Length: 398
Image 1 (cartoon, rainbow, N blue to C red):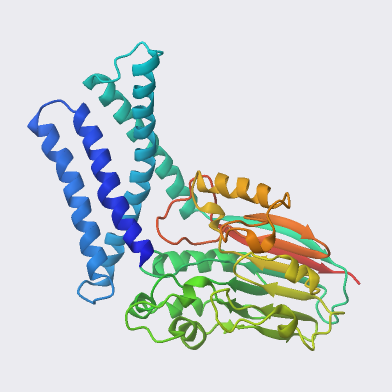
Image 2: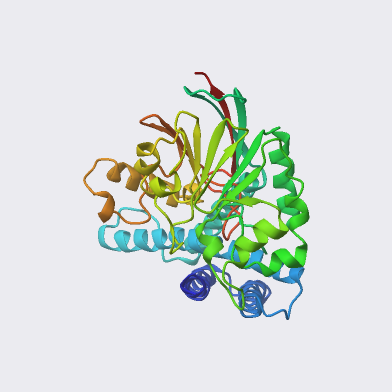
């Protein structure tokens, strides 16, 4: 609920600020100001209709999808526009004190030129971000695991985290994702959490399971839970999302579970941190023959030493989205650098701090990869980040 409340605050107050700053620069012509005001009125109306009718069944899926897209896109627009307009106000204040810029920043013309320039920058950034979202990259890596795997010498692992299927990431987008995943010709597919977005109702409405059924590979399709699988909205039953993944989508959901595949390598699936009964990794891996390769799926990349200390050869994570859009990705990179200095102990760090917010690291004998995710929670823009499918070409050598 806090997320939605914050979104309303953004919609109302930031929109009002942007509206007022634009209004100050517009010519005093009704044929300009009336359409300008109408844009804000229409957008806020769409947002609040979508907000208060979501999950009630009063609107069809297509309407809710469109309303959600408009509302989340406008949120990105308001954040970027607000930052640029606040910069203008700061320059205006400094210029009033120091007079360092030989321009009257209070003049209507100056306001209008800056507002239009900001509008072009933001729209161009969002256009690029939309392109990056709709065109996922394939990150391919070759890994060597020096262990004996009796029946599997080479393994092509496809990892797709944070799909967020729902009202925004609808069936059409999921179909694109499935096509892209299958194009990689995987031997095994791993989906480490946040496969579903906020509610499961939209998946039933779209018969989303038909797309997941197209994921067919030699060694199977496996999933673990993410924090979104534990978000319960409306009249959802406990663990209903997880139930949908296994019963309807046909995925093998590993919940603090270990499975031996082809008598050759182990796959370990950990529950998300939000699971109240989450087990420790040593508990999960009791009875595992660590002479064989071990791959671990874990949604949130906290305490990476656990996988490294317990004999995992490969550990894959998601959750971070690499910040999703600038400057959050830069903030995450800086916080990671601070955390990795060792100044902040593990038990004192913020939950938003990660040893690796995105990418690859060799930690002891463990190959660690944190994906920026395939889908998104909220706005469908990748500004400064990428939507990605990870392909790991694993060679077992011993």
